[in-house]
Image (cartoon, helix red, strand yellow):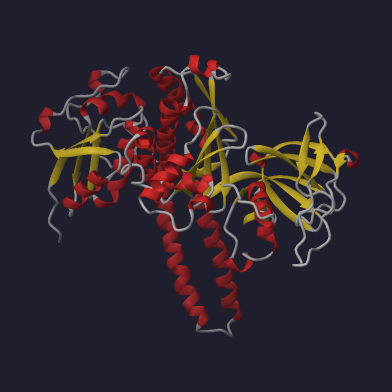
Length: 526
């Protein structure tokens, strides 16, 4: 029998932050939970109670734990990127008391660690999730044994049928477990808007936050990581990106800036794009620093602005720089480190319509989003709803056809045809992605609808033969065998199983447009 582990108490001081201390404290607890036999914290309600923030900021988080490997627990705490330092508490009586407003004093016990239950039990959600996960693991183990037994008896058709049915049950259970951990991104919207209002006042700027299509549902652990990093980026934008109101007015801009946050699903990733009309991105300064450090593998003039912006979010890139580039973009070093820690990446760019965009790519195990089921010709595909601005009835007379391509040259090359345009009911002229003779893999046969879409910060139009409704879908990556087929050329980044059980390609207009730009010999935009 293993001897009982010694119980230790540690004080954890968090890095100065923007009102995220309780989130950071909860992440520390989550990180060390698998290493501990017993675990509790003070204040007890850090996971769900934002009123603990002031206490955490002034006194830190106090953790009591027992573990067979206490050194590993302490090392894990110290290595958390949002922990400033931690130290052992010799005398628990020195721990400051914490009382939440509105709770009677006699409702709380004298000990700072009144409830020595595990952190994951606070609201029961994590416990139920763990129970489902354990049940799934048992089912999968039984399934492996059943399948091995069936492989030894290939003539037993009844057994093969049972294995097939069991496979379907395991798949359904796996999906149920994943869905049990799903929450909408919208749940953090009030916190983000409060954050913008608070830090706008601190930095003397005027700004609002517009969250575009925040209905995507993601795993809770992914949302926690996203919120931490998004707030860090928003803080950078408010402090170093948005000008003072009088400077904005002098530059011909509205005194009040607008930060726009948009989510996009991209197969195994979710992309969060944060855009504002403040100071532009200095790609030349980053380029000079990259050349100085010997990071470029080809001539500087062949790099796009987006590639320079991706360098900026490499951990350690700006930390080693000196001068104005370092002082202006020093926060990007920590943002890049946070992204790398969760397996993500990012880039910065100046858009074609005069704004700065910071794109954050987060890996996700499971995503649910709303998509329109669309058909062009013989191809049925799902189009993420967040990319659709509006529908109109298609009118052929509203098309302005592009010029046909010239004859082939001596080398056999053919210049690309000029794009076609579609004039909507609002009178605006919009590029048509799949116009007549466009050669697009999504070209319609008898278009009925014109879809106006948001892509690369601009509006595009797509003519479609039918729209068969909406579904909430989860997206998986395409099998490798399809990588060079027509689907990627159509902007497909994954597939989904619909309610009727049929597979359906999921198309991103951003991917489609990038494919077109590459075909025309232009640099594709991120």
